Structures are given as C-alpha cells and as structure tokens.
Picture (cartoon, rainbow, N blue to C red):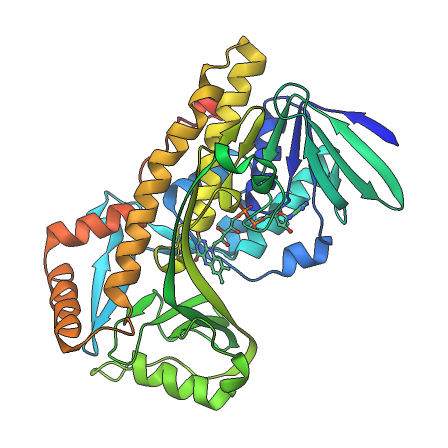
Length: 404
Ligand SMILES: Cc1cc2nc3c(=O)[nH]c(=O)nc-3n(C[C@H](O)[C@H](O)[C@H](O)COP(=O)(O)OP(=O)(O)OC[C@H]3O[C@@H](n4cnc5c(N)ncnc54)[C@H](O)[C@@H]3O)c2cc1C
C-alpha cells in the first residue's frame, strides 16, 4: 500500500473539485484530487452552459478566464415566449450591468484541468474503488490506481463527487436530513450542428409542454423539450424532435430555431434534492454531492462554484489563522444560497412546464403568471437578479483572491 499525505483530499474532478483544488493552490494549500473516470470522459460530458456573473468573475479572479473571455458568449438578456409571443427581459438593464455568459461546462472543466496540470499538484484520473474513512479525526481516502492500492491521509476531505458519488453515502443516515422532490417530466436535450437563430436564450411556454432554445457556440445550438420522465430516446427520431421543437418555439413574428444535423441527444430526469448539513466531521460536501436543482434556472454549476468559494475561504482561515469558525459555519452559509436557488429553480420549472394533472384552469393561470412577469418591471427585476446570480456569500478577498 502506497501512503500519501496532503492537507485536503478532494474526491471528484468535476467543476466543484477542480475549482476547489485551484482555489487552494492559490492559497498555497496542498490537495490531491481523485477522479474515477478518464480525463476524456470528464471533458466530453455535455451538461451546463450558463454561467452567472459571479461565476464568470470568480473564474477571471482565479486566472482561468482566458478561454471564457475568448469563446464565452455574454448575454445581456433572455426571452420568455408566451402564447407564441417572445418578450425580452433585459438582464443587464435590470441589474446594473450584470449578465450571464454561455460557456460549456466541458470548456470550464478543460480549462481547470489545464490549470491544475500546470500547478504540478496531483490529479489522478481512473482511481478505482474510492472509499473514505476516519471522518471524525483522521480522514483517509483509499483507492486503487494502475494496479496498486493507495491511501491518502489528510486533514480535510472535500466530497465533490456529484450526486452518485461515495462521499454523501459515507455519512451515517441518521446524521443527514434529505429534502427531495421529483418532477413528472424530464428534458430531452439535443446538440445540433447549426448556428443559433437567436443571440439569446428563449424559454418557451406552450400547451404541449416547455421548450428551451440555447446555444454552445456560434455554430452549435443546444435545445431542450419537456418529455415524460421515463421517455425512451428511441421514440424520438430526429425529424420528430425538430417538428416538436418548431411547434413549441415558433413565434407569431415568424422566429423559429434553425434546423441542422443532431450530433448528440438524450433524456435527463429532473429533481430537487438537498442533503443537510453539508458537513460531517472533517468531510465537507460541495456541489451536486449535496444538492441537485432542476436545470430550468441554470443554477447547478453555479451553486457548485459558490460552495467551493465558501469552502476555500474556510479552509484558508483554518490553515492561516488556526480558526475553525468558518469551517463550522460552512454548511449554514452554503445552505442559505442553496435554498434560494432551489426556490428559484422550482418556480421557473413549475411556471414554465405543463404538469400531467393540469387542466384548463392551470394553463390560464400559467399564462397570466407569465404575462405579468413579462410586463412588470418589478417582476422582471426579481427574475433578472436571481438569474444573473445573487451576490457571493463570501468576498473573493477572503478566499485569497483579488477583486470581486
Ligand atoms: C443535462 C444537464 C444540463 C445542465 N444544465 C445546467 C446549466 O445550464 N447551468 C448550470 O449551472 N447547471 C446545469 N447542470 C448541472 C451541472 O452540470 C451540475 O450541477 C455540475 O456538474 C455540478 O458539478 P459537481 O462538480 O458538483 O458535480 P459533477 O459535475 O457531477 O462532478 C463530480 C465528479 O466526481 C466524479 N466521481 C463520482 N463518483 C466518484 C468516485 N466514487 N470517486 C471519484 N470520483 C467520482 C464524477 O465522475 C465527476 O467527474 C446541468 C446538468 C445536466 C445533467
């Protein structure tokens, strides 16, 4: 058995684990990152694409914003389509110049992997049989790599291993409260090799179900359709997907998505989930390991970034000033934002999607809701400030960064 020592052992090289590793590095704190998948798998996974203003500012302040600045697409607004009429919400005007940036999660992950490799600090892909132990006093992470057994001894473990990881299940069940809601629908998502016909996202309410128009680059469109949660993708030949996209999105002024070759498609179920507290002994959960939001509000990746900013601030205080107060407050500080994001994501989801039990009353109520939203400056401001992201829970300076 090979024994290694570090300060923070990080399980998972998704956005949460990689961001945390980089924030710790910038503060001179050692970490080991363990990931059970291959590097290519982690980079190629197509997921989030909408970055809040605070996430963009964080990546820049960390010195990993070059790709974002050259290839990210800043959006000052978004559209909500109700009864085939598109209404623009001017996010920047309503929030003193804040905006969102469309930059694929796989690009963010690739940039962070490059930054990690440049630090020379350990990042092990294809770590098998990862397990954690000693959470009360002497944390250890065990894993297999290249045919050998390894043990990492550390002061703190960061559980950044996503919803299906091993860290959350390592906490005794009676020490966690789980809050959960599943939705009676999922999203059929496609990537298509065609230039987007709108410069900004279009959230389309339609009596046949919700649809979302978005993009990944000037040549790749990303679109979603509300479908039943257990829908098989085999039921959706490409022509049927485009017919349904156009039906749900086309507006009375003639706008509709451009049609092109579909290069990837799949169905994702939707859920809201929170496990609390986000800390057990010396294990700290961050990102999807602790919470899941339905993707309608585009909050998942952004919440992961917010968690690790708070964790980096707390770990810095622990090592540099010998104070554990911020570690003790980590879960409460993160959960305040998590619940606000949960509420916003639930609200966006329930306002825009059709539920199987909904009748004509509910359809008219949703239309009234959305027409109010798109005509009241107060209502639009509320959406805009949550969509571009609430202010960070801790300052960038307190996490060892300048600016923000
Ligand atoms: C289809 C889809 C669309 C989405 N759209 C958006 C969006 O528009 N905006 C947004 O903000 N969010 C969106 N999200 C959510 C976002 O992708 C997640 O919230 C984000 O990936 C969370 O990052 P994470 O690092 O916490 O978890 P993950 O990205 O899941 O990373 C966890 C990592 O841990 C690894 N791991 C798991 N188990 C182990 C183990 N036992 N040992 C070692 N490593 C392990 C995994 O392989 C993975 O690399 C979307 C998600 C999906 C599925």
